[in-house]
Every structure is written in structure tokens, then in C-alpha cells.
Amino acid sequence: MKNAPILIWGAGAIGGTLAVYLARAGHAVRLVDTDPQHVAAIRAHGLRLTGPILEDTVPVDICTPDTLTGSYPLVLLATKAVHTRAACRQLLPFLSRDGAVVSVQNGLNEQVIADIAGAGRTIGCFVNFGADIVAPGVIHFGGWGATVVGELDGSDTPRIRSLHGLMCEFNPNAVLTPNIWGYLWGKLVYGSMLFATALTNEGIYPLLENPVYRPVLAALAREVCTVASAAGLRLEGFDGFDPAAFMPDAPAEAGMASLDQLAAHNRKSAKFHAGIWRDLAIHHRKTEVDEIIAPISATGRQHGVPTPLTDALIEAMHVAEGGVPQGLGLLDRVRAALAPAPVPGFCFDGQTVLVTGAAQGIGREIVRQFAVAGARVIAADIGSLDDTVAACDGRCETLALDVSDPVSVHDQLAGLGRIDVLVNCAGGVCGQAGRPLEEIKPDEWRAIFAVNADGAFWCSQAVAPAMKARGAGRIIMISSGAGLGVSLTGIQAYAAAKAAQIGLTRQLAHELGPWGITVNSIAPGFVRSNPSTERQWQAYGTDGQQRLLDNIALRRLGTPQDIAHAVLFFASPFAGWISGQTLAVDGGK
Image 1 (tube, rainbow, N blue to C red):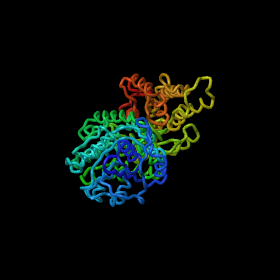
Image 2: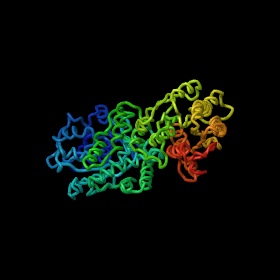
Image 3: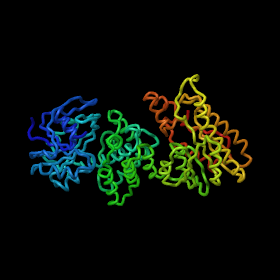
Image 4: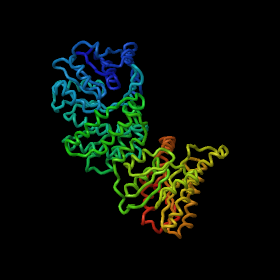
């Protein structure tokens, strides 16, 4: 055994992983935890570490706080940040007079510890490895990450060198730094993005790669970097995170490149979701958002830096803690704080726009863009529109509408008054998957036509008389590349229905043109914008995804914004002499 015993307060993912490695290195480790089942399992069977890095079970001494005895020169505090203050008060009687508390936690807990134990008895530490408790007494260690230690004042002391040596027995690449606050705030930047991923069920690296949400993740990181810079901090990079890429004066491409590096780092980890996600989805408990993320907003206020995205993240996390299911809609609440600038030349003040299929992805973004451009927007869908309202910061009206029901369509649209622009976005595969022709049932075929082709017809029919009476109007169909070629889904009805939309576009343009009504269609390429397209994307696998990208001239997937901007063009005066056309918005084929 090596020298004095080490007390690790909190036997969870971080504390438990450290305990196994330090015990294997020959140190006398004592664990303290408040979970009686976890404590009992470790006492009975030892502490088990599983995963791709290490499979081992180690006997370790563990107790609950009420049975702890002794005095310890080194305490590694590994509780959730929400418990830092209470745990620090509990452990203080067991800390030797010349001892120190080391926060191996997420957040800025060193400040809390220093308030209670004293700055001289507090040491800074940064850890970024991936681990989760998967059962009492069992921890899954999913992937390595940076480990950094440093005195709070940046000084070089014997005790910090000793601690660095200890941490090297866990991670041989552990770093001793004079700038621990730069690392801790760097982790806050990265942590803000992890909290954002936890609002959804997408996983860490899939969301870091998602073209729809990368801009909001980058903007969130930039906001935290701006706060840190205003506070006089020099941020440090780690594990693919480059703080310089998110500074206020950095080009947008630098932030995207850093997100690529972070995604690549997380792809190597067996930890698919952040611990925050597990707090919500598995443990159904409060997260650490108030302890980890709220200090960013507080520091911003101290230095006069607005933090709208961080504030929206905190609010969205509170909504999730209140029981609202995780999903992209929660992240859209944060995205709404990233208000897009109006597209130059596109002003729709005084116009009313009706968008069907507005509950998700492309339809939701079309609503959002028209709202920003000043239109009165009516978002219509058969599903919940709460997330759409949140995404456009409440600047839209809602209409529960089943576009496949012609009677309902005519009755409800008649009560809306003047409609200047109709966007027929309702559609999709209706939960179907590609199957051989001979297996398709009549009701499956009709279901897809009812929404995609019939729905566009009924809605166009309902608004046409009033548009004719005014001598003006815009009808825009959201078709698909499947209507111009072959459907990637393999669903025959989808390809046929989208082709029917394009045919309907040409016919209505010819019929309605004499009344000043233009009718055009947009055929999007592949856009990851809803659960259906996300399942399709994941089903391709890494090789299939790369093949799809290689077939796109611009070498990227489309985004809902790409489609919405094309819609705004067709709805604008700039497209006044364009009708009957189908625009492929697909990155070039």
C-alpha cells in the first residue's frame, strides 16, 4: 500500500472509476456514498468496472457518511454538483488540518469548496472521461478524456506535483497546469453543448454532426466563450475542443471544424449519451443545470454580456425536469433564441401565410422564417404545434388540420380570412418503410397519397377562390427529389405521390396564372429534419452515409433553412414571373 489513505466522497461514475484505478495501483482507497444499494453491492462483491477499456472487479472499503471515521489528507470530491455544498460540510470534520479537497466534478465547484473549506485547502481538477453507473456496484467506463490538475492561483507547489503524480496513475497523460480555471471554463463551453444534446434523444456525436442544430451548438459555445473572455479568462482546449474556434471574432468555419473534432472524439467512446441525459431519461431526477450552467449567465450579467442562448438552455432544461419528454422540440426552444436575421429583400409585412405540415423539421422552419420576415403565419398540422410556437418565439397562430379530410380543410380554411401564401408542406411516408411491390396493401398506398398529393389539392382548392378574387396569390408545394427521380426510401407510393405533386404544380400554374397566382414546387434533397429522416439516415450506416454525401456536389446534407429560403424566394416579388416550376434544392447532383 502507498502512504496515506485517499478518501473519495461519492462512488458514482467519476469517483468509482478513479477508485478502481487507484486501488489497482496499490493505494488505500476509502469510498463514501449515500446510496445504500450501491454501498451494499460494493461491500458484498467489490466495485466492478466494465466497458471497452477495462473489465475488473476490485475490493474497496466503502461506507456511508454517518459511519465514516478517521482523518484524511486528501479528499477527492466526486458528487453531483448539486450536492457539493452539503457534501463539503459533511466531509470537513474528516479533512486533516493540512489536507486538501479536490473537486473531480463537473462545473465550478472549486468556488463552493473554497467558501467552506478555505481556498488554501482547495485544489482544482478537470476530468473529461466517459462513465456511467449501470447497476449497484457496477460502472461502465466508456472512454478516455483529458485529466488536468492545478492550484487555484496557478502556483507550483509540492502538493500539486504530488496530486499530478497520483492522477498519472489513473491517466498517464494527466496534465499539470498553471491555468486550471481556463480548463474548467473550457469544460463549461463544452458542457453547455452536452446539456443541449441531453434535451434530445439523439446522442452526443449524432447531434454534433446534425446540420440543423450545429449552428445553435456553435452559437451557444461562442456565447460562453464571450462570457469567459469578458471575465478575463484564457480558455484551454482539450479532446478536440478548440476554444479559439468559438471566440467572438473567429470565423464560422472554425467552429464547425471544432464540432467535427468533438464528434470524432465522441465517436470513439462507448458513452453515447451525456450523464445529463441519463439524469432525465433513466433516473428521472433533477440535473445539475443550476449548478453548472446558471453560473455562466450570472458571470455574463456581472460583465454586461447578454446570454440569451444560455438562458434559453436553462429554461428548456427546467421544462425537461418538469416531465416534458426529451426531443428535438426542446432544443428548438434554445434555437429560437438564436433569432435569424431577416433574409435581405424578403419582407412579408401585412401578408398572411398558411403552412401545412408545420409541426416538424422543414415545415417548422418555414413558419419560423416567415415570422421573422414579418408575416402573419398560421402553422397547421394534425400533430402538436407547441414546439413550432416555441421555435418562432410565439410569433405564429396554430390550426389543428387533417389535410386528407376535404370537408374539414374547406371548413377550417374558410374561417381564416385572406391567405396570401399557401405552403403545402404536409407529407411524408406515414410511418412506412420500403417493401417489394407485391407486398403493398391498398390502404398503405392510399394513405401516402391522401397526405402528400390529395392534401395539397384540397388546400389549394380551398384558398384559390379568394386568391382569384384578389388577383394575386402564391401556392408553393414541398415535393421531393423522389418526385423527380427515385425515392431513397424505396417506397413506391411516396415517389408516385411526390411526382403527382409536381404534375399538380404545372397544371395549377397553367389554370390559375390568369388571376395572377403563381404555383411552384420545391424538391428537397435529403434533409435530416424529423424522426423519419433521422431513422433513415442512421439505417444507412457510416459507409452508406458517406456514399450519399459523395453523390452531393456540395458534399453536405441540406438543412431546413436551405428549403425555407427557397420557399421565401418563391413567395417574394423576386419570383413574380416564375410559375409552374420545380426547383431542386439538393446541393447539386
